[in-house]
Length: 138
Image (cartoon, rainbow, N blue to C red; front, side):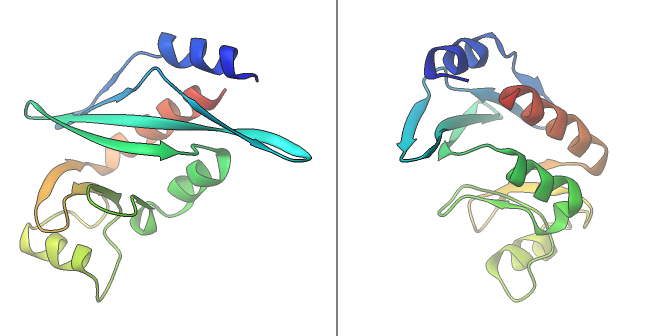
């Protein structure tokens, strides 16, 4: 896939509406060329919750990341700094404190600012999110 094709595909991808959150993709993609390897395409995922917008900027959404989400959603983590899209199995971390304080179901994902739960992605919605991610990279 080249940059023009990737951009066209992202522009045509519809947003994903879940119970508490809407996922969208920013239509501009950053291409990272690599010597002797295929280029990486970095996306910005936009999350809308209660009329607030949060961005996960510059992520290389690939099969490895999706596979991690499929195999063990509880240990999934996206974000080097808040906001985080996270599973709930992070013992002895700030995320575990947020999970306990907000009674988050342990089989779900959360979007958190590190202190509060911004949104919950429930267990029955995780396969839908996975399929949406897969559609983005195909």
